[in-house]
Length: 269
View 1 (tube, one colour):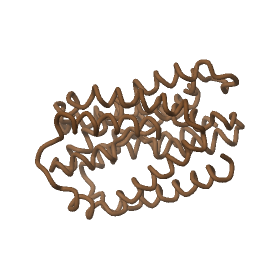
View 2 (view 1 turned 45 degrees about the vertical axis):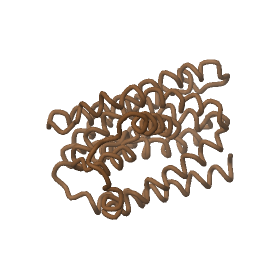
View 3 (view 1 turned 180 degrees about the vertical axis):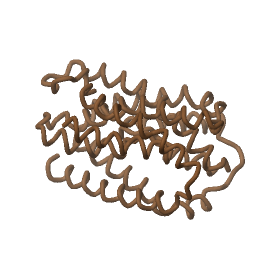
């Protein structure tokens, strides 16, 4: 289990740096498969996968964001404006994941990943279609969008980088700045989300060995030990590569992943 998850950590760190995401789109499907193989209780498998993924994003997202920050690409004003509402949303999303059935969580994840996959496959069209303003949201729109992003990301076990990049590029922020700033969003969402998942899962019986609430520490450390190596590599590549083809390949992976998780939800619950 540790070796497989270390491999997932290598991939998660790379995509975190490349696309400004937390790596959850790689980590959660891997955890679903691995936890299922090692017979984690099915009624809490999805909650454990999502919560553990969030825990890894604290480190992976920070490593990625710091690598971008050293290049001067992170917009700290956006980080400060969005942070409080991202955190509120993350706590709400974590509480919802505790309340919802595992099969429902899988369906939400599969739909969310499918939509993100379409975004990666058709990046150029999306950028043109949604480029409608030169200012970031303020006031009620800011509160609404950032709170929803935090809750949505916590439910899926992701860093929220993809929708954050969509919003920032729609507001005519350069793509490299959007990717770099979105990497910081992951940490802001993952930290309160992880703490909330530890608390809400603390009273759940029959948790797997090495778990604190819904967070499996053994799995999280296995992934993080490798993701910290590849996140800076991904950040460097993001500033030097034309990522259109790479995004499309990743989008195809997301579509396949969404179909797999949807199948698991329908067949095994």
